[in-house]
Amino acid sequence: MHAFDVLGDPVRRRILELLADGEMSAGAIGSAIQNEFAITQPAVSQHLKVLRDNGFTTVRADGQRRLYAVDGAGLREVDEWLDGFRRFWTPRLDALATEIARGKRQRRRKAT
Image 1 (tube, rainbow, N blue to C red):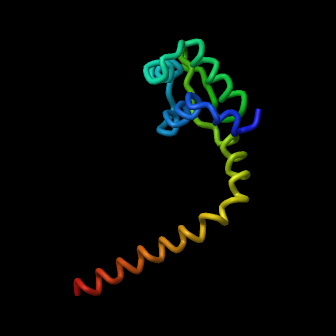
Image 2: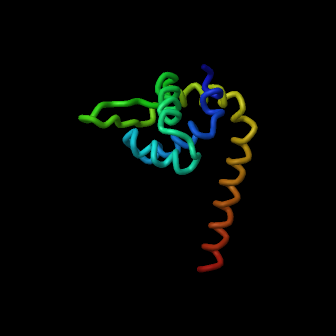
């Protein structure tokens, strides 16, 4: 499955957002997702499996619990694809950084 097919689903994107803050148990992920999307626990498990099978998450056993974390492998594929488009926004971000620095210098000059 292509990375964008995996990320095209809002449930899977939300799971990754939750995991971006750190490792979570399958139960905690399931509770959060079930509350937000009104889907069943088996459906959440299927989404976790898709993320795991496609390199977006890792899972480790901790006794009876399964702890999930973000795996950068799937995100690297997205980053590589986006690399061809960075030229469209990088100059604008560089220009913004220049304007911010210019504004800070002007405020410092006025303050002194």
